[in-house]
Image (spheres, rainbow, N blue to C red):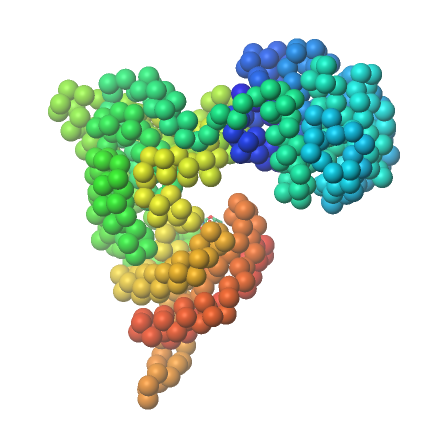
Length: 516
Ligand code: XMP
């Protein structure tokens, strides 16, 4: 793999994704890994990421010069560039003069990394210190007002560095620079893609699982669906999926799992119709956190019962269920510590919820993949597009989109309004632009309206379209007025209980995405 050494400023994941977009497999390693650790992974190339530190700060992540003597091509970015310069005897000056944001650089020699660059270009910078003299053997490729040495390379030793961030979209030629490094600088072939993952994972899953039986909880979301499809491809009928229909899904979603997913993947599915049970448990409850607790608790109980049945059925055939599939993704693995087994910290939490007689080993076939790659794998496996491209949807479902008590009638009302909003947003081609668009029923609020000759006293629904990268922050999506108008007219005409449609124009923070 190409190793991306993470110096801790969230750039490492972006770099790893860009490398993969260049069709070269990459992995992230923490900066605490020793040079021996790095080399033990037999890296095809190494990229040193940016980071928040100054190379002069106490406890600044250190790069040993021996890294550059191993014959592995290295690209240093921002902090990584300065650390490389310092390790090899260049001069890094503490100017305290920041360059931040779009910055003009002058390319004096294109060399390898900047091949194809115009003499003047804008790049995205974020640094305080600057390299003032390149180490011996390096050629300076570019300069900027605040960076006498803004890029350098030593072709002989295959060492390269740039002060700016080629991985961000605000560096228009950044991807080109990364590809120059990978293809020309490191001599790598662009032969990896998420589709290759299928064959490799199928082998791994078979080796891990052997002849044992495997269980998987399906939620209808992207991750669990793709993970299940991959395991199905690997071990076929050794897999049993469990789908708990808690009645809090949106219109058509249960059918998507029960019919379309099963038809396209051939998984054995055990459907548990727990709709009445959830409604009974939620009766009389309005407090959002109480609803969440109840839904979570009931879900675990229903899943446990179903898992016990699967275990008993297998036992009757002299087989044992030894594995549980989880749709853990690479960002979870990296964020919980990076190294091998790191995601187990998190996974054990999930599995920890299960009692002793239901302890399974984990199968996590997506743990090296980013979300967009999971989608590509899903498409490769023939998972229905409606599932592959599904927007995020909370586990407690519509239960936390009814402000007030959850009842069967209110769920029907919300489902009808939500279906109209989704249909019109899809028709307008806005699905990929919108991160998610909760539709919220204000069941405890009544509003006066007039329809035909009569006064109505119904409920408002709220449209909450948001744009986001990761749900941590979000902005409200500026939907076209004509789309809003169609949604509003249709909902108030077609859903009798709703006589008002309002738009939420609050960013996050201060508002959360969901209303509860
Ligand atoms: P908030 O409302 O906190 O939502 O801005 C951030 C993201 O998380 C989803 N969400 C949940 N997902 N269980 C989940 O599985 C929950 O209880 C829950 N609450 C919010 C929300 O849809 C958004 O994507």
